[in-house]
Image (tube, rainbow over all chains, first blue to last red):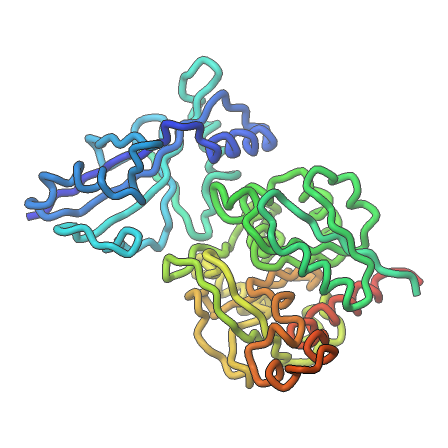
Length: 148
Length: 263
């Protein structure tokens, strides 16, 4: 038996990439108050490994550096409402992270989660998120946007 | 004949501007570095080179932020007016993200990408690339001979041509596949990065925009070559410092740019 587990890793320090995305979207006429970005890590793990998976990956610095990252397990393997995940279209599940295998883990997938907020901290309108994806966040030549 | 002026456009994170400018000057062009904060300067140039590096730290995707930068707008306008635009490595990624190559869809609607290498790693390897379109398809390389082989250094983490199958078919059928990877004798070899079609460079329909992933400017002087010519030149400063190898691409580019400038 195996278990599929999803974790979000976000920065606790200022997120320069999110800021750059915000600036670029502004140039494209998509006005956003704030962007929340996270790396999504999905693991297909043996039952035996799944039990300790959170503490295992929390100790792998290339995924989670406690000095600058926050690690949170997601209850769903799909994006939350208002969020979009960008993934490589032709991505095959990896077995290694930074050249290392994780005992009991059969496959690893990585996505980037984007959430666009307005000035009052609410999700932007779905049409604005769609435009951001189409015009900038996703290159459909090799990426796919995954929504709720 | 007036001197043709070439802008080498520098973004925050560009790292190949000096050797690119050096190659431009070596082939007799008048070149200048133009920084991203100076888009107004670009109007007075006859041709443009987007050099290699990691513009904006490759944030979001390699080349994506730069492709939407204000300094790219005049470059796109110039390309559409028929001026020559050469993108090398990170510059090639920008041209794909801007939709200038292969150029089969509206601007900034990319249909192809130089995506992460199949290995998942940054790779630095000496390569040769071979022209696989008719020379008439690449006026940006005026006078280049059919099947020309050029040495270069491939040095990138995101150099794998990726596109949907129908777009790859269009790229191949309609002559957008400009260079493929090959050995020193011109025999086709697999792309080191897993690129579709073993693509090393794309060209637009008009042939005035070329996006090449490997760096010819890093193999443009005899001391940089990975073959016997370097050893043979050892001890002879003039021969060691002579332009050769990858400079060939710049020589044809220079010829094209000069021919495009009214006397």
